Image (cartoon, rainbow, N blue to C red; front, side, top):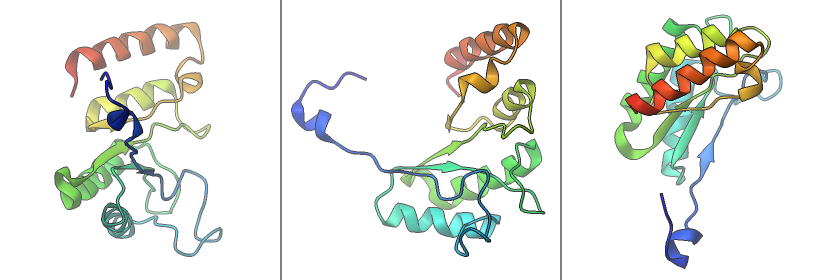
Length: 144
């Protein structure tokens, strides 16, 4: 996207990341961790003017999860609640628990409208670099 006018360049988009991968309710009692809490938080953020939400999904024990089932449920619950009012971005943060293959499989399965990637996590080994490169080329061609 090319921004030609000073008005276009001065526009601001608020992007929220309400929970992260590591924090728990011990860190902050109001941290959204469950699906219902995340949906409510996403709606509140949208009402406050946020344009995009960055999601970290938790499993039933409250741990960071890149499991496909967990993320399909969370992503669609939040997206269905927001509709087109807000972009929903899914994290691929490994947190030392997930492999590049699992990160890529997550995005292939969920097909979120936006995703974040830590390249240092995806490019752990030469084989992973080749696979990650192919993945990003495919991602660009599909434009989910």
